[in-house]
Length: 490
Image 1 (cartoon, rainbow, N blue to C red):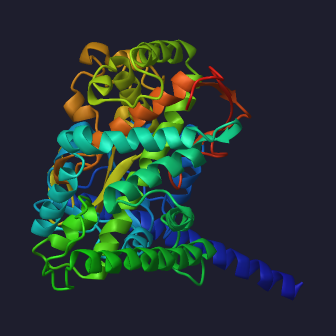
Image 2 (image 1 turned 180 degrees about the vertical axis):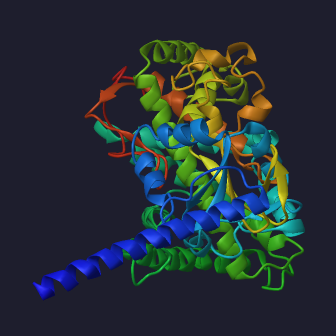
């Protein structure tokens, strides 16, 4: 009896201490909120916050309730506690614009440690100030309309057709799309054509990306440990390319260029080697690693989801196919697309816009306040994380009618949204606007052209869309394909 009594008392004491800790956590947060004028919100349970609720929601096809419930309770700007830090969560387009355009004055970039470690300290994603501006401008110069028209379109068309030539019967669409976008990125950045070597590097990249949203502790996370090992292999492979190119063009590690007889390559690596900054091999490799991730993962996902949405919307697929059959009918068999063909795809651009809006490949961005920021009658305190949610705005019924329905016709006559520049941000904005946004649109358009003119398809099995750790389908969207014309050369 005595033993049982003390055991019961110990349990009661433990529960009481836990409740007291939880109440103290809430009271401290409320006092802090009143003192700073924080937006309203909840911090969840101590230490963990609301991270588990967020992850659980984004592992489903419908993560909206996580946002909707809090917006309904607190308004479009609210506080939460995710990924180990108190965070102000914005679903307001005006606040998001303030955050996107306030870098260096109001906010700085801030990403989870796992992403920072895997991309490298010299990646474009983590650069700041004048160096970021210079490198962002350099990156954009390699995917502007002039470069796309005169150089890249030919390679995009060629590599898409090369991949589709091998399709038959059952295809894992996301896997094939990733091969296409990785090969395009390797060609654009380093003038490398597809080979067994590039495919080995791509497979290591898959492991790197899987580690982006894990605990950055190798001892506790097998996925992160595997990602670090893969990142090392990728860096070693790219370092070999950089060293070989230095020999070819005669550029020393100090950036001095010597005369060589070999033909110069016009790619990103050549620009980095010839630049006045005198980048080290490590800096160049970090830069290339991040650009390969950007050009590979997001565009391939957009390709896959465009096909999924079109499959689920037969009228849109029929209209898209009609547009591309008309383009193909004017061309000789096997003839590549030209820039004038790309510019004559108006409904395709509606499909691209709507795919990017509904898919939300980049759901939002994290920043850190470097000063107290007044917003909507509240204050985001200096040092706090801020998350500007693009997805919440894109899926808001106030900005897009029937926002959660795939409807490419909403973009005809530029009537997709009341103020597209403010509420439609699939590529971010401000000084960190995705430098490859036009390249991504061209890649997606060319891919859809060759897909719909050569194949018909149907889902091989049911597949679901999820949004954590990245936007993707659970089974890589397997489809059964049939050639529309068995005699047509692909």
